[in-house]
Length: 233
Length: 178
Ligand SMILES: Nc1ncnc2c1ncn2[C@@H]1O[C@H](COP(=O)(O)OP(=O)(O)O)[C@@H](O)[C@H]1O
Ligand SMILES: [Mg+2]
Image (cartoon, rainbow over all chains, first blue to last red; front, side, top):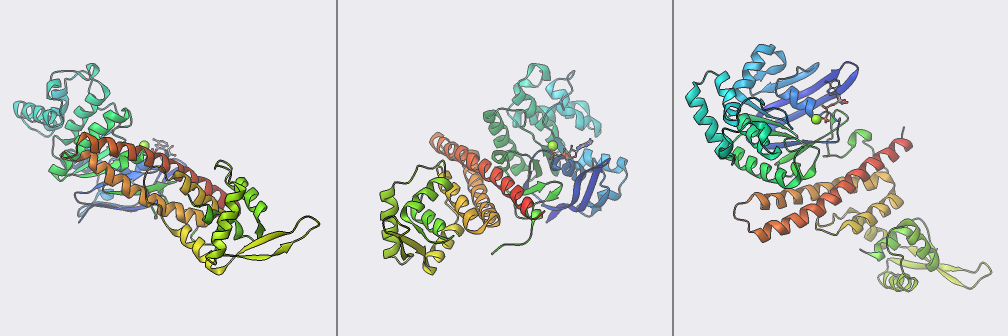
C-alpha cells in the first residue's frame, strides 16, 4: 500500500529549478533511499513529501490526504503527529538535556511532563544512550547526538520517518552503528522511512532506491535515461 | 579477465595482424598489463580453432608476410554475449569491468557502455544490500561482519567508478547528440 506519493512535483527557488516533475511512490513500511549527486534535489523532495515545503506544481499525497492543498497550519499539525524528521546535525536544543530534548515533541503534543520524561528515557534506552539522559548535547560525541536526535524523531511513534543524510557528519563506523540500530527500531515499529543520502553504503540499508538527477527521477536507477531514449545499433 | 574477448573486440573494427593487435590492446587498455606477443598468438590460435576468428589473407607491403585475422559471425556473437553478461559482483572484478566498458565503447559506442554500466550497477547495489543485511543481522558472527566489510568496501569502490564512468559517458553522449 502506498503511504506517500509525489506526482509530477515541481519546485524552484527563485529562478533555480530544484525539482522538475518528480513522481515517487513510497510503500507503507518500506525503507526507501533517495540517492543522487549533491544538488540533484534530494532534500527538496524530502521537504515536499514531509509537507515542509509546498510544491509549485504537482501533487503530494499522504494516504488519502492531498498535502499540497493544505494550509501550513494543518501541515504543521500533521508533521507533529504523524511524521518524524532526522537531519544531518543541529537539531538538539543546546540548553536542554538529552531527555528534555527527546521529550519536547511529546510536550508540544500535550503529554504530561512526567509521562513525557519516562517515554523519552525509554527511547534513549532503545537507541543505546540511556546513560546520557541528563547530559547536554555539547558534552556528547557526534554519534551520541545523532542517537538522541533519532530518539527525538521517533518518540511520537511516527508513521513516517524522514531522514536527510542522518549520518552525513559521522565517521563510517559510527554511521554503521547508528544505521544498524535505526533499521532495527524502524522495522520493529513498522515505520516507513525516506532515507536521503548520496552514499551507496548508506543507501544499501534501504529496501529500494530512487535515484535523482538534475531534479528528475532517473528511471533506470542512475540510468541517465534523461540523456537519450535511443540506442545506437 | 579475458584477453580473448578483448582481442575479439579489437577485431570488431576490421582485420588486424598479430602485432597490430598487441599494439591496439596496449593502447586501448593503457593501464592494464601489456599483453605479451606470444599470448596474442596463442589466443588467436585458440580463437581460430573455435571458429571465432579466421585468417583474412596475408599482407605483403614490402616486408615479411603477415597474416591478418578477422572476426567471424560466431566471434561477434561471442563478443556480444560477453558484453551483455553482468559480472558477479565480488571483490576484484574491477579490471574486468574496466575492460568490458572500454571494449563496449570501442565496439558499439558510448550507449552500449552506458547500458552495461546501468545493469552492472543494479547487480552491485543488490549485492551491497545483501552484504549490508549480514551486518545488521544479530546472528552474524564477527567473522561474517569482517568478510561483509571487505566485500562492501570493494563494491563501494567499484560503484564509485561505475557512477563516474556513467557521468563521463553521459558527457560524451551530450557532445555527440547536443
Ligand atoms: N533555500 C534555497 N535557496 C535557493 N536555492 C536552493 C535552496 N535549497 C536548495 N537550493 C538549490 O536547489 C537545488 C537542489 O537542492 P537540494 O534539494 O538541497 O539538493 P540535494 O539535497 O540533492 O543536495 C540545488 O541547485 C540547490 O542549490
Ligand atoms: Mg541535501
